[in-house]
Length: 401
Image (cartoon, rainbow, N blue to C red; front, side, top):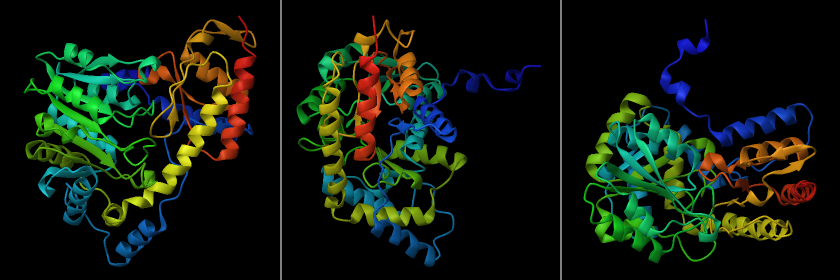
């Protein structure tokens, strides 16, 4: 009897995370003795700031080792409100805040709380890999609105307007973007808000997890616009800006009825996030926002270096990312060419061929809804990035018609 007969149709239909899969393949090759450089994972290569770690240690010493309220410690929810007011000019109360085990759970909670089978979610594409599957897990129908490299991967408001139907429940996007690094300006967000505003049944889920990694200008939130303010859910967390990926702490700021619904969901799934981790998050959020600047400056220097190296590869089409720590080149000029006798048909084959051929782990753009591209993370050391770019140039120059 097939093992699949014991599994649910839900899990059989669920796609594995491409980023996690490529990271595992890279680790497997390393374990076999290969010199693999991984540019596949979306994780800052910095340690959590020492003052945050010290806050966690102090919390442990003070006995913060017990269950927490499902939506989070009151002092953390108050700190989140302070941060949103200070950094984003957004006014929320603790009743609007839900702290979860990572921003991924926040988005999962939202989909479970808001979607009925057949409800539609407009997703800006390229999108983060898990958006599509989380929506489908809740019975929702993803509706794709795409932008390509010539548009700096930023969608047109007119396309958003055309995608809205009576079944649309919410619009979901990230800015700064994973996987492209694109950052929507205030003017661009206002135009999107203006096309959503007339539709009272449509909410907005704004994933702002890369807020602290913006190179040009400042981070803007669509929640600032009065015509959609009461229908916007801001998603954020500690992982990217404070290098706290392993702490698993995300949060939302939402209308109270949505916050209550997500608390209800979370109460039956995981309950509250770790107690001492939440105390550390308070310290991080109430610190001077400039504590994140040094990491951002390092990422900017790496962006400049990697973009300069990739521009030497004739045929790659590049958009210069304005935030996050990814570069998302369009590689379609190399499709139907061959590498060491194997014809490369698409980005799935390309990412696998690069890993096998020159031992650089990337992620296929198909996982992000952009099958012409691959994603490179420059959350790696300067030495690793230099060697990876050298290997990539060698790889692409070896391709033949």
